[in-house]
Figure 1: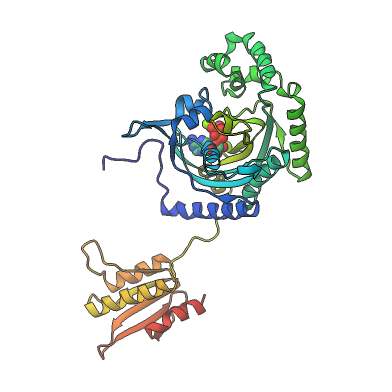
Figure 2 (figure 1 turned 30 degrees about the horizontal axis):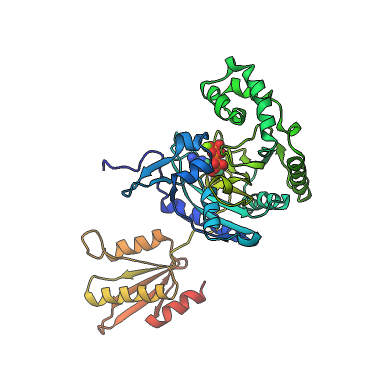
Length: 426
Ligand code: ATP
Ligand code: MG
């Protein structure tokens, strides 16, 4: 076939998708334990939500968004992240009206036009949790603990929580000036992108991956001396709260994150087993995001974790994915006569209705039932516990035999007894 999936986009095939279901099950339960309710958000939003929310000098908005105009001339964007949509939905539906707090989570596909490589795709999946309407450090601590707990339950090892504060509009300008002075004095060493960042978004100079820029960023002043009293004490509370809960973390003065909306807390969780794409999770506080997209003041803190990367690490580390859902019964039709065919179909349906996973021989590509031998082979390959053999007896009555695939033992049974026997033997 000439038509292939677009570049950077993957199919998640059955051999893999049951593992995704496991990760999402564990996540959903953890979210409930931490008081977050699931929400489903649209996959596309008005472009403005992201250009104003995420920030129009960020890599995401400048280079990575899938923008399109619909037939009505509206400017729309496939969501590159979920936080802005979450805040939009909470405001639109008054979820935080009258000072209420809202703990939400969602998961789904995000879209960014990036250079595809291992752990980096153009359509990828995120788990996203947000706490809206709370400005105290407790909310930050709980969000970080929530993300770490999901990873703990999934059995991920070798992770590191990296923490920073990016200040607020009160103290960040002071820091910005210091950064400008530092980098301007070394302009000749900066890469092309960083020269632009110097003009448009100096904080972003700190996370350039180019070695020379990186060395300059390492030598840059830290934000800690510039934080205002409020940001400084918030940062102290987050740090001591994490220590109190027994979460080790590392401070990284260069952690600024790729989205403009962060204030105060910024953090990432890195894996030692992911190579270049080492972040499994990123998040932080964003007290001005709502206002920047035209909403009321609504402080928030949250994180997004990359499902594709979580799966990569779990596979790398040999983590358990629970048990792959198995077929339990294979219904084998002795021959292709209408009576046997109907009885086989009837039995398969009856068992499925009883909640028993069944595979049967629905015929081959030409519509014919396959031979008895071929069906038994399929039953073996399917790894079922039971094969149910349907045949026409000498008395012209339908006969049923249950074969225990482990022991080979065969028992004649009535159709109405099969489900019970299967369940009793579980
Ligand atoms: P990176 O530095 O790896 O580009 P980011 O800071 O752009 O990450 P966020 O916007 O914080 O990523 O998204 C949160 C998480 O989503 C990341 O930690 C990562 O696990 C995942 N993620 C981001 N972009 C991609 C992508 N293109 N493909 C797969 N996963 C991604
Ligand atoms: Mg990125």
